[in-house]
Amino acid sequence: MTEKNLLPELAAHLYASSSADTGRTPSERELAEHFSVSRGQVRETLAVLEAMRIVERRAKSGIFLTTRTASVEALALFAKAGLPLDPIQIYEAVELRKIHEIKAAELASLRATEENFARLREILQRSEQRLAAGEPLAGEDRDFHLEIVRATQNTVFYRVCSVYYAMSERRLPIYFSDPERGARSHGEHLQIYDALQRRDANLAQALMSMHLQGVESYWKGLIGDAPGSPGG
Amino acid sequence: MTEKNLLPELAAHLYASSSADTGRTPSERELAEHFSVSRGQVRETLAVLEAMRIVERRAKSGIFLTTRTASVEALALFAKAGLPLDPIQIYEAVELRKIHEIKAAELASLRATEENFARLREILQRSEQRLAAGEPLAGEDRDFHLEIVRATQNTVFYRVCSVYYAMSERRLPIYFSDPERGARSHGEHLQIYDALQRRDANLAQALMSMHLQGVESYWKGLIGDAPGSPGG
DNA sequence: CAGCCCATCTGGTCCAACCAGATCAGCCGA
DNA sequence: TCGGCTGATCTGGTTGGACCAGATGGGCTG
Image 1: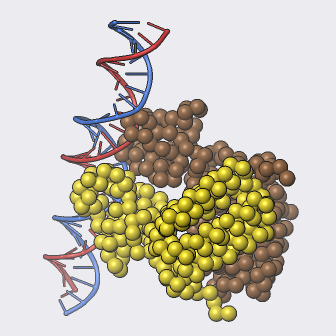
Image 2: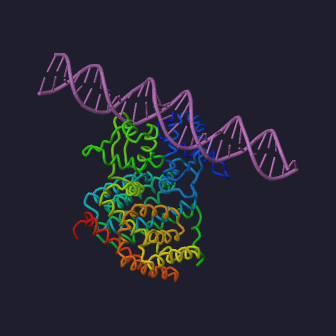
Image 3: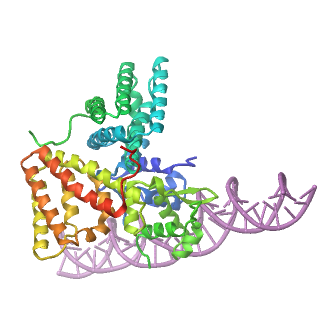
């Protein structure tokens, strides 16, 4: 059956079957039986979930959820498992994405190699074909944005950013189901590409900022307004 | 013996005993024997290392290092284990830290609560006492910077940033062993605090930028110059 | 010298125990 | 009736052994 990736399923199950007040989850033995796997298998997965700060294992006591302090990787995992994400954490992650990618646009305009540009062109062509065929965009949006981060030549940066996309992947089909939205997004991508190629850091930055503003308002519309910015 | 945290030690050992060309590490059974623990124990740890992208486990073949794509968490772990970090990755992480914290200063100036300010004051007082006593700064610098990130009220942001400090912690004593450096750093912290309290986003940003410039040059001096920014 | 084949090694998985501390229901005494 | 003690039970932590199937590599064969 679940020959692979116990992790998302286990995470989902923990979330669903934990005690509402204490956050206590079923025991390792129960989980093993529920998924028809060995206890060792469960423990291995729990070790990862603990490293991700999703779960806390207390010796001789139990396993407890610690979702409030979940890491970015954890958020991505939640999204994969189809878990009900905390709206506030989604908003926070979107804000962080904005911080990252505006700066990424600036750095990319200074550092992008011909290799990066070639990949960007290839992605833009794929987008164009899809739009021409009347199909919605799929991974092209993610690819475009991640390629820009990669163009900063900062691999640590790249890895941190990748996780946001795993997170929002499930919702992208909804976002791009509106063809007009897809076309506008593609147009903005083209402008950004031009700015990068002209090595115009300020323009690239500004365009990316505007582009992401649209994404942010979309998310805000879905999940409500920003968290407690002290009135003013 | 190693009753706790096999992880850093195992990571260090993998790094030290892996094949230089293929990156292949000793087998699970060998590792278990080397650390005098069970194979299950080793597997649990390897699962975490794999989730961190430090290691790749290939069924029926072996375990291989994948350090080049290590995540931020992985870097922090490496630092804890005293591993020889890839200088380029250190530089990349420092650059990312700069990206984060300058923006954090701006957001914090807009969103910091009285609670945040109180904690910052407390941290500054501690710093002052240490300096007055002629002691070098210890965790105060980290606390100050992290508190500012926390003041953005973005918990995802906060978690991402925390790992940088775990990373540089081992080197801070060196950095602050120079009393003049500690005093100057503390002075800059005071200025930043004032800017935050006056809710002056531009000033806070600028001061933080200058402050981190010093840190960056220090690191650059230690590890060499920036990576391949295409000439110009 | 090239190519095939089998012993060996490896990760993947499972099972059956044992340990010691946390937990808590139930008993005992006040 | 209620508070405090206690012992059975449950839990995570850890170990050892076992089996599987595929990857690997060295030696044999042609």
